[in-house]
Length: 393
Image (tube, rainbow, N blue to C red; front, top):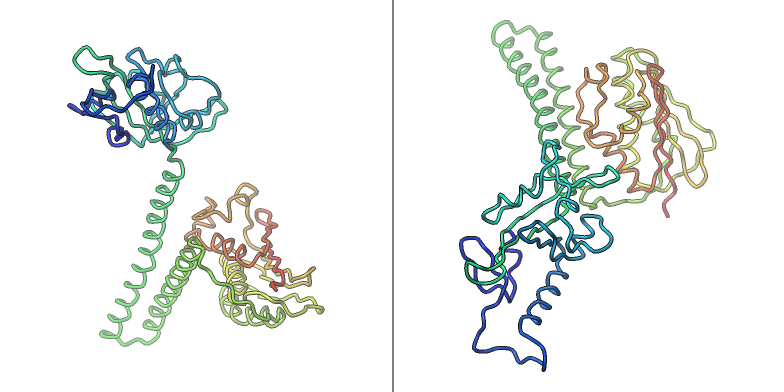
């Protein structure tokens, strides 16, 4: 609230939520230079202190005209020049949380006690917007009932804070949804296996139920791993352990690891290796995790054909590729595919579990090892994800 934000040496008294900015005479007055008045010095102190505040401050009279402001207010409002004497509605264009314009002068005039809100947005002439914290407090400039009245507005750009809040809410929503489904399926399959074991002992039914539960547990393990990696990446605490990597061996091992998963969908898992590959100096852990994300996505979104893991020699590094014959990605989605929580609206994508974190984590890991990601895809004609990994000395 503005009353708390303007706790200054010259704020002598508050009454009924009204801030009094004028000093009372005291017995121990400051020694003044010849010709200087106490009021002039107090005004100079007030102006100096308000000018040093990081938040925007605007003081207006009861006619809704600006009488005092600081540099921070000019920055927030994107105004060059003098605001003094201008009507408030000419300098402050507010919208509510439903993006509807607000009569800011009426809003201020209706205020009887200090009030604040985080639900406003400020619209600029170029069409851009920022989220705004706005505090409004009525003030009395002087003592007694006859003192002049006005208002003090405190402004703060909270766009980043709002963005983080929305991201947090989206994170909770996505993760809770993605956790709920596999947990429910796992619980149901284990309960079914227990029931069959007690009633019939049919080993095939038990195996089927446990296999399904196991697959859901693997999905949960991958989700937890993504969340753990994401947390460390967001806090910039990922460590890079540089070691020799044999690209031929890495691709061959990955192909062996995912051969059964591809075969279970009737897909061919192939490799395409440059015979001139050389040892790469980078993080084996992060390089492998990035390629695993590419491979699992390729298998997940490919129903027919093949997935090919490739590696070619590049200047001062190696370029790895994962190519599939799957559903492909539209041009619009390609621009957002590495965004946090992004999942395509394509119904074929929605048929598979996913949080939209895998490729975002991949992007974070690529930055850590100074790698470069690229995507070439056409809807219904497959995709190729590539990553150039440089030698790290």
